[in-house]
Amino acid sequence: MSTATHHAVELRYVTTSDVDAGANASHVQLALEGSRGTVGVRGKVREPALFRDALAATLGILASDLRYRGKDRTAYLAYLMKQGKRATAQIWEAQKAFLDQSLEGEKKADAVLDPVLTVDPDQVSLEVFSRDESAYARLSFDNSLFEGREAAHGSTFLDVPADLLAKVDRLRTYVPVSLEAHVALPARGAESRAPRNVEVPHAWLRGFLQVQSAATLPASTCTLAPIDLYNVLFALRTRKAKKAPRALRFELVPGMQPRLVIEPWELVLECHGPKYQGSTPAVVRTFGRQRLAALARLLPHAQGVRVQMLGPGLPVFWVIDLGPATLTLALTGWTESGWSSAAAFDALMPREVPDGLAEKLRNRLRKEGPLSFETLSSGTDAPKDAVRGALQLECLRGRVLYDIAKGTYRPRELLSTPVDEAVIRYGNEREERAHRLLGDGGPGAGEVKLTKVHDVVGVGTRLSGEAVDREAVRSFFPSFMLDLEGRVREASCGCPHYRRSGLREGPCEHMIALRLAYARQRAQEEALRQTPKGRAQIRAETRSYVRRDDAGQEQVYRVSLDGKLVSVEWGPRLGDQRHQRLWFDTDGEARSAYFARLESLASEGFIDSVGGAV
Image: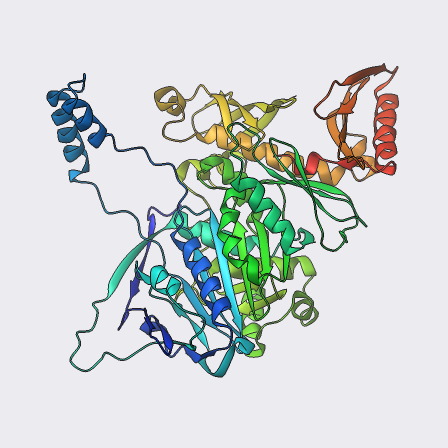
C-alpha cells in the first residue's frame, strides 16, 4: 500500500462564482477551473423556480456534515464562574491554556474536491459529495431547460464560495434568469486569483469513486409517488428515534405496491406509485434516512421517485424526476461507520478484468457518447461479467460515470490523470493487513475462520473467529457483536493493538478480517443455497419470513435449522410468539423438513427478510 494519504490537485480559477439578482433580470455566473480546456454552457432558463430549488438543494447536500461534534463548554464555564459556582477561574484558565496548546500545531482540515461540472451533448450535470462522505448527489439539467443553449463539452471543477447558496436562494422566479458557466478571462484591471492547491484525502476520494462503482451493480428497484416521499419526510420530521433500530424498511412484493416501514415505531406507509415489478419478494433495510430531508425543497417539482437498493450496507440511490431536470441522491450507508464499511467497499471492488477491455470501452464512450450496458456489451466479444467489471473499474478510476437516471454510461474525467485503484483499494494499513490475513495476496498470507455465529433476536449477530497471523507466528481470537444497524459492540481481541487502545484508534486487522470473512461467507451461502448441492452443505441456519395483512399487522415466522432440530417461532412482530421444536432421526430429514417449511411460507405470500438484515 502506498504511504501517501492525499492526492494533490491544483485548481486555477480566474473569477469567483456569483449571482447577480436584479430587479428586471438575474444572472448566474459559475466560474470553472481553467486547466481542463474549454468547457462551458450558457443559456436562458425556462423554469427559474425549478432551476433555483434544484441548484440550492444540491449545494445544500455539498455543505452538509452530520458528524458529531463535541460542544465547546468554555462560555458555559465562564457563566458558572460569574455565578460563583465550582467552575473557578483557575479551571477556566487551565482549560483555555490546554486548548491553545493542543490546537497550536494543528494542521488545517483536509480539503475536498470542488463539485464536478460536466457538459454533455444532451445535458449539463453537477456532482457533489458531502464533507462527511455520507451523501452523493448528481444534478442534471436537460437541454430543454435552456433557451438559446450554447455549450462546449467536457468536465471540470466548479468554484463554490461560501455565500453562493445564500445568493442562489435570493433568485426571484418572476424575473428572467440566465446561466453562464465558463472559464472566464480576468476583467480589465482586476487581479487574477492565485492557484489553489488541494490535498484531497484518499479516504474522501475513495468514498466518492466507490459510489460511482456501486451505481453499476444490480439492484432492487421500486417506484414511488411524490406523496410517498412527502409522507416519509413528514413522519421523520415529527418523530425522533432515541434508540435502535432506525432503518427505513422497504417491503417489496411482486405485483403489489411497495410498503415503507419506519423503525423503531413500525409505522407502515402504503405507497401510491406503480406496483413492484421484481421477480422475487424482498425486505430491504436502508439507513441514512435523516439525510432525505435535503429533498424536501424538490417536492413541489417532483414528478416521480425511483429507489434503487443494492443490499445491506451498500449505497441506496434516490432518483427524483423533476421533468427537465433530475437529481440522483446516493446515501452511502457508511457515515462514520469506519471499519464496518470495509465489507461494503470489498463488495464494490471489481474482480478480474481482461487486459485492454476497460480502455477499449472508454474510448468507445468518448467517440459515441452516452451508451447503455447492452450496447457496450454487444460491441465486444468479452462476456457480460467482464464488461461490467471493466466499466466498474473505469468508474473507480474516475474516467467513466454511470447515469442511473438514464441507465447509460458517460465519459467523465474526474482528474487530469486517472486515479490508481490500488491507492483507494484499502482504507488504511490495518485494512490491508486484514485482506492479507484472508489470503488476498501479499507476503505472510494467513487464515481466518468463523468459529461461532450467534444470531441474537432483536439485538444483532455475535461473531467469534480465529485469525492465524503467520507474520506474528501466532493465532488471535477476535469477537464482537454486530447490531441491527451494522455498528459494533462488545468487541474483544488478544492482539497488542486492541490491548493498548481498544477501539479508540480503530479496530485491529483481526476484527476487520473477521467482518470481511463473515460478509463473504454470507454471500457464498446465499448463492449455494439455491442449488441442491449447496443445500446439502447447510447444517445450521435461521431465516425470517414476514407477511402483512390487510389491517397492517405484521406476522413473523422464524425458522431455524440446527443439525437434527428444526425450531419455529411465529406470531405478530409486536406480540407474543408461539414456539415449536421438531426433532428428526437424521440431518437429512431435518434439512428436508426445514426447506419444505420455507417453501410453504413463500407460497403463502411470506417474504424472506434475511436479505434486508445488516
